[in-house]
Image 1 (cartoon, rainbow, N blue to C red):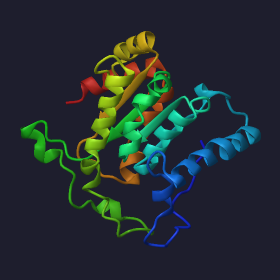
Image 2: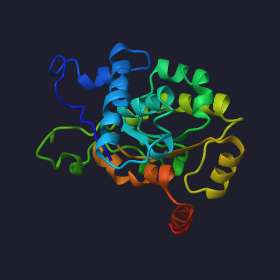
Image 3: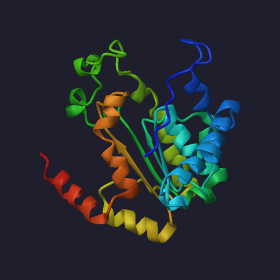
Image 4: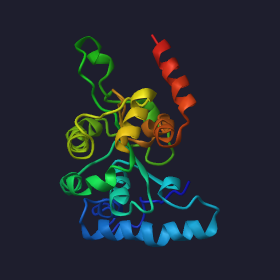
Length: 243
């Protein structure tokens, strides 16, 4: 696992964030330069230093928020290097969404995982239990960035962009709606055999947009990208037993 820091050396401290430029929309000058940096410098360096599995089947990208958009764009721009991506609470922007039809042939051979938190209001009776709380004390138990409000509004705000990506994947990559339940192993296998393409989407109602929320569910994208079938079946059985 290679982690790339993104929260230092802002272009203008406090005003122009480095990560906002590097994790920007498809086609952006800084964003494209960052994709090239990862693919042409960092990835070869990692392969040279460590015993890695070469080829797209052995490499995946994972990112959260704007990093989720970058993880997605790395797969579309460099499919010969990265065969899968996981996007947690992704911030998808217009050019990235618009690029999906043109990248359909590439995406058809990728494994993709999407998720997000935010408010969940489908069930009126459970609505109050699935809204993101305004304040969560555990988000502030940190010696650094203790003031962070946990971005309680952001995952809800990002939902339209995520829905747009899902719709584009359904229309241009799959053959009609192909959103997968992570634990529906039979359906996932069927889509893989028929189309060579699979993507999973999970909604975690009431979860915030921060590292603590993502850390609680990081096993879900890892299982979707690399999990064994028997493990998925076991988790599916456990989920069905929950009250």
